[in-house]
Image 1 (cartoon, rainbow, N blue to C red):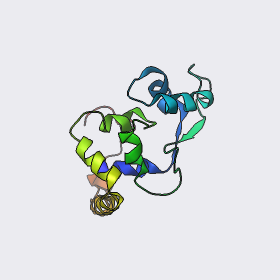
Image 2 (image 1 turned 90 degrees about the vertical axis):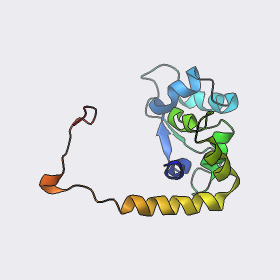
Image 3 (image 1 turned 180 degrees about the vertical axis):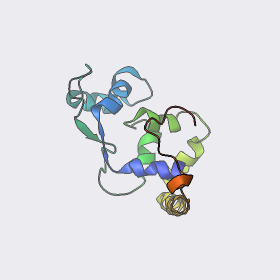
Image 4 (image 1 turned 60 degrees about the vertical axis):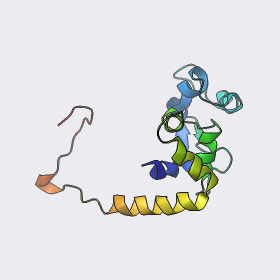
Length: 135
């Protein structure tokens, strides 16, 4: 799962998804937070749809910068930064930040495993309009 989270090395996020992280939380580099604030005002409803790259250094190449950023406390999303925040996945993040080849190989393996999952279809499956309640 950690390797798959590395897909956040590309893409963008809406202000509403990172506003609280840059204004209210302490597990973020202050320079990054201050860099993001002009495009994401602190008041909900203002700039909600403004976008910011998930990776400020290399926003378009698929690389290990996601892990480098999180180790440096420059993860844009709260959920991403929580994965490197003194917990059980820190060693994996540290390894991927220092070893891009290990990340790429593990990402490929994880994507293939995920692609081999056989989802339930037809009458065997269930489409939920609200995913919060437990089946």
